[in-house]
Image (cartoon, rainbow, N blue to C red; front, side, top):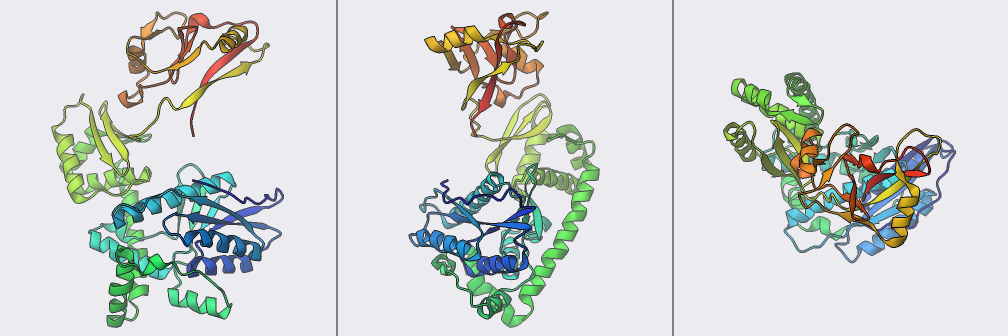
Length: 434
């Protein structure tokens, strides 16, 4: 993803918010209304634009959005996604959506934004509900898009949809009244995209049958969201003996499934949602239960779902990325104060090894041994990983060698015989690539 044309931040600003701007009617109306309602002395506004790289005209949209940001005297930044328009339409839609949210998250983190505003409106919500119906979704899917939600757990970024109770007709009226200009995305009329087909063919027919169809569908989403909130609360209660940190205990989960399968499914879905994962189909859920009921307690199991791996290890389900690059990063040497009583590696020895090129990053070969405690013998890395309860898929940890000797293993420890308590010294630390 590329980024450019960053504005200087105002360190005296009390509140900093961002508006996701595509250049279309919806986001232009959102930006205009936000700028008119905000006090520039107390609020700093950023405009974020995501360039998907799927259409030639998109290069002009960046310029349009940047000029609009200048007109409103707000800050501007963008990201360029590297997507290829060579796969099925549904796949492109999903990849573009995932890439867009990832890029927006990245921009929020970079510019210290805690509140991100999106321009989804009532018609978008109605289309979402219809699409979820066609997919056979349950209550979670039928709840549609929430008015607000945490963008990424633990990063304090809240995603807001302030236009969700406004229809597209109301936005058009606002735009005409305030003489706003916007861009018409030609892909919005391409009915090979399912959402566009629903927008063009299905929703207008429903409005003919029931004039309040759009508002009623949106209202149904609110009611479903309330019902889902109750189900989440029930999952928390049912899962008290099942949830452990970010893992899922299989034995009590299977016991719950035996007595109340819908409740166990609810717990499992809640756990997946806590990891920001999509809901599995009914067929996939049935397949998972079949695996869990047939596998032995000590066995390992792995499922692929929504771009991650769900692994069974030591009778617990855990989520891990299937493409995790354990050896992508670098070893750094953090200085230790000479007054400190903490041990470390001799700085002179490290600098001599650096000048001679004797510091290496290696992968495991299977026969390595390391002593990490004074009263403990040298142990194989396999034994150390088992003692530390490191899952098998996380055991390809990077190894630090100096002058051909194993000095440190990421996530395990540093060779005790090589530690010193006096003199200039450093501590080896593995920094994974971001």
